[in-house]
Length: 215
Ligand SMILES: N[C@@H](CCC(=O)N[C@@H](CS)C(=O)NCC(=O)O)C(=O)O
Image (cartoon, rainbow, N blue to C red):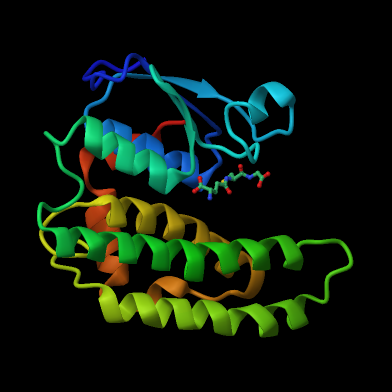
C-alpha cells in the first residue's frame, strides 16, 4: 500500500503484473499523481470472475469505488479527472489532444507491432527472418511518426512530464529489449534525442524507484 491521495474514488486497487508494460504505465501514473492504492499482483486470465472486472481478461485493471475500469488510456483519463491537482495533461485543449495523439502513436504504431513481432518471431515454427521483414517496416514507420511529433524539451511534448512520457517510456523499455533480442536492432538510436529523453525520464525519483524495485 502507498500513502497519498485516494482522489475521492474510494480506495483504488490496481490489478496487474510486474512484467506488464501497460500495468507499469498505470502504476507510474498513480505514483506520480500521489494516489493511495493497493497493488494486487494478478496475471491476465479468462476466468469469469476476472472477466467481470476486465472484459478482455487483460491487465491492468483498476478498481475504484464506482467499479472496475480496464484499458490503460481510459484509466489515465479517469485518474486525471479525479485528481487534476498534479497534472499529467496540459491545461490547453489542443495541447491535451497532442498528448493523446502521442499516446496513440506509441500504442498503435510502435507497441502493438513490436508485441506482434515478439509473439510471431518466438513461436516454435516461425520463419523469423520473414516475420522481421514483414513487421519491421511498420515499426520504422511508427518511429518516424513519433520523431515528427516529439519535442524532447526535455519531455516528449515540452517542459511538462505527461501521460505521453509515461506511455512512451514503458513502450520503449519493451521495444528496446524485444528488438535487440529478436534482431539486434537498437530502436533507441532511430530517433535523435530519444536516448537522452529516456535517461531524463529514468532519472525521475519515482521512475527510478519503480525501475529498481521488484514490487
Ligand atoms: N489495450 C490494453 C492492453 C493491455 C495488454 O495488452 N495487457 C497485456 C499485458 S502487458 C495482457 O493482459 N495480455 C494478456 C492478453 O492479451 O490476454 C490496455 O491499454 O490496457
